[in-house]
Image (tube, rainbow, N blue to C red; front, side, top):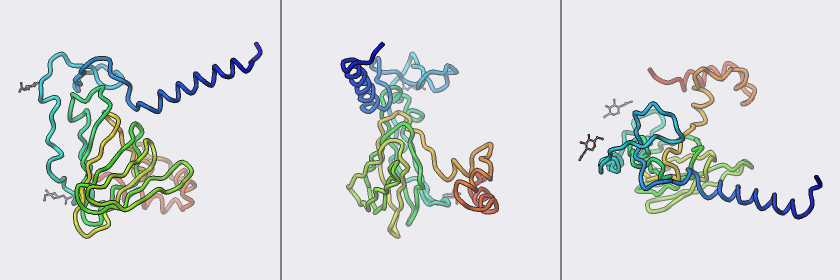
Length: 220
Ligand SMILES: *[C@@H]1O[C@H](CO)[C@@H](O)[C@H](O)[C@H]1NC(C)=O
Ligand SMILES: *[C@@H]1O[C@H](CO)[C@@H](O)[C@H](O)[C@H]1NC(C)=O
């Protein structure tokens, strides 16, 4: 069959529509009012199965009210308010988190495979940024009341630039954005990523790879 101009036009239209659908919604659309997650179900579906009985507690969470403890190596703590904490979020396509930063604390480079993120600064001052697939860093210093956006899937970070605590509220267009921290994904995976893979990728010695792995190994 010959591919004429009309067929090309049809293919382009269908493809644009598919791309459009993919871009406008991160999580799939809901098919009913509520589908409160049965987090204990053994059934595997895209998301969680709905439980039959629910009440207001399934739509409530007070875990972002207070600052999280930031006395760790990096000086930051992310507290999620996602479907794992709020079963009522199942199928709704949104979630939040609170991130607290110790003075000069860092939320290290990471990605959210399933969501775009917006942060709203509660207090403090942060240097934040993301890196495009063309390796362009898009970064800015933001302070209380200001917002910054990290597009879905792109590597991003936030660093507290002040000798005082900072905090943000983050919003996501996914019930469970997922987080992959670059350093720990590569150097603290289990089973471990082969040393020669990392040595060649980072253009360093295996000795240095082992040193980084030892530092990033989960503390038991
Ligand atoms: C809501 O349901 C949970 C069980 O899913 C139950 O433990 C809790 O007591 C209920 N709360 C109210 C206020 O009815
Ligand atoms: C952080 O502080 C809390 C409360 O002060 C304490 O219980 C915890 O052990 C500390 N953690 C670390 C890693 O120092």
